Length: 254
Image 1 (cartoon, helix red, strand yellow):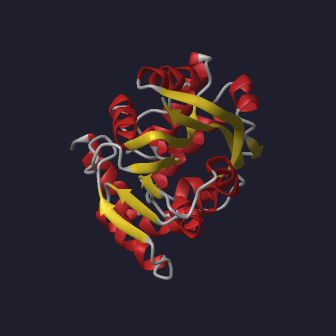
Image 2 (tube, rainbow, N blue to C red):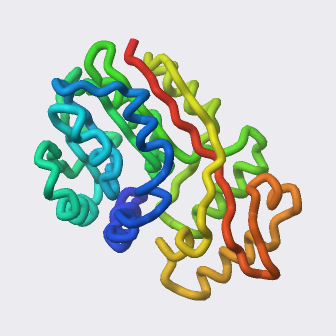
């Protein structure tokens, strides 16, 4: 099965959970992105890989139009059904690496907690740059990994075990290089630790108990330094929560 077919399969199955997920529906980054972007009522926003539509919902009252895209039709239909009261959101099935929009057609492009599912992040960034207006703004929020390679390998392996549609979380240095390569200049950024409630996190994608046990064992067997870095909270052999690294970056098209 091709990587993008896997993404469609996983997100079709989990469409309701991404609407209600506390990791996706809450968080200080949602009001913060409005402050950073300073959206205006004459603007068009393109939200790439909208998932449960949380960014589209956040920005909708402040702009003229939001185009919420996702590669997963079932996810998009489910999100549209939850946001029927917001009449300025259009829903388009679209691949983040091959957007069906004209050059220079959007004032703002956003993508939140999704890019680690994209097989070719350079194509994604190239498409963002292409569809942005001159001086347009791009806001990316995604899971990232430590510049310490073993730490990054641990979390990418863990995420792939838990969600086989996961491709790779990049290092911040990799994102900065990509943004620079495609003439997107960083104007603001913030990295933080994000706490994940373990039961909600693992049950969002895994249905089989054997699979859940493998993930738990992988975490429990991690070295002390890894458990400390990811702030893994454990009682006995019960995992309560852990943290991952997240990067929020605002860019302007050069």
